Image 1 (cartoon, rainbow, N blue to C red):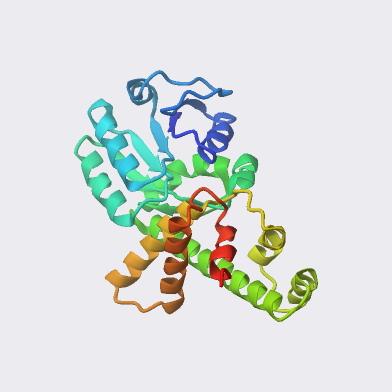
Image 2: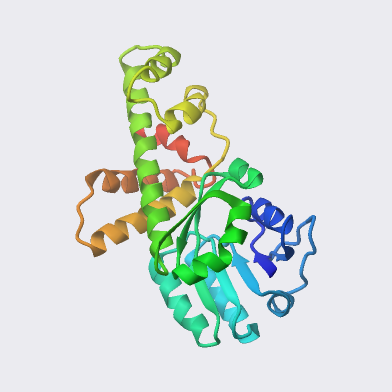
Length: 277
């Protein structure tokens, strides 16, 4: 199988590198990149080359634009794996668009951050038919060690969105409790150690506490990306008339963080928003 990987950003480039170790691959990005695999000259070259197209782009509008550009260039029988985090409604809509030219679209968004992408240890949530899942699973396993089919087209994205909604809520809880501990005069290093003794121990306490204590927030996952995901989660909750109060609070926190100019900062920087008073 020949693969064209479109979107060679902070996640896409290491993901493409891992696929290229086992499959014939070319890559493309709107910004020219130095790559260990051939860099395509155009979308047309990608379409002409590939049996399977993989995309990893930031937002709904980018994926819609990419489909519009690629659709006239595609051939019947090609498979498109979109690994972006976009709305489930968008992927269902684009599946119908691509079906008009005989191309099958599936969604396969990822969890974990760039170090896991480099190691090929991402978590991947697949949305599409069982038959399609079996066809593309060898490619997905180049990028992730945990790959699960969640259901039909759009269901992988639903899973990614609720996953990140929970992450946002966990980080918000860490922010609130460390802020409270600071206000009541406890040493935060001791607090982090003591929390680890019990059921409060969690990944985002372990990995983000130093950011908070040092008030420095190197970006592993940005405020703007989490803001996008928690808003998607709220839309899903509203659509299904589900009341999720902690999610609504997190949405408010991320809206404030965006207004404060923290978009490109790590999402743990919301500690400063939660505890600004």
